[in-house]
Length: 254
Image (cartoon, rainbow, N blue to C red; front, side):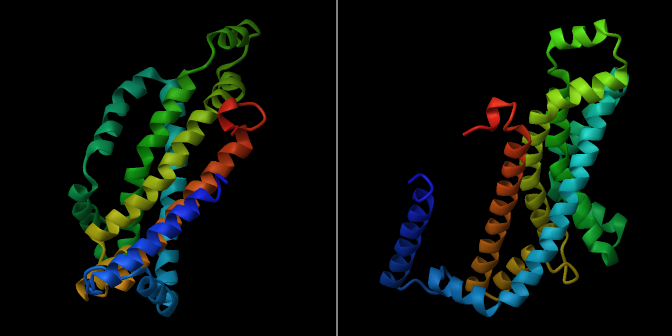
């Protein structure tokens, strides 16, 4: 029953939307009915799926880059307090700086002929900090008794890292990765809105193009695909989290 409730609520919402638009005769260029959006999804499926693939590639690349760099830098921070004190404030500055403010600079520095690289950098900036922050917290949240036990048995720093700190930090890392996955998609879309051009043909560009032409059914179809991508990324990362933690961590159950 719990699994049936979300689609039932969505169905009721779509039926109400369809009925309200038809009853009040709302123009299609203002708010299209779901039936028109579904028709646009079918008629423009080739174009929209191609754009979805481009957006998905940038999102996955930015997420993987954020995951590797965030965890790697967190490990370095925990190995050197001086390095953490020197660099962590700049990571915070990078996180709180609005992406729309630095997007034009990144596009200029990278070059308009390599706009996809610009999108990757901007999406990585958005997705990077949650992984770094959660990984740093997880690496520091080691049971003191276990740490003392490892030291008692003469464990090296490398053994402490691989056999104690990283396993203990895994729930934090996976939680940060789940946040980062959604932010990577948001970053890719926002970056394309700000820095995109005719050479960047992801879903965000299709939204801009459809809005300029007042083709609202295609615009809502592109937004629908963006939502589907976000749900898919979240579901996959949630599944990975539960698979990796289900045998030993209580947070992975239920």
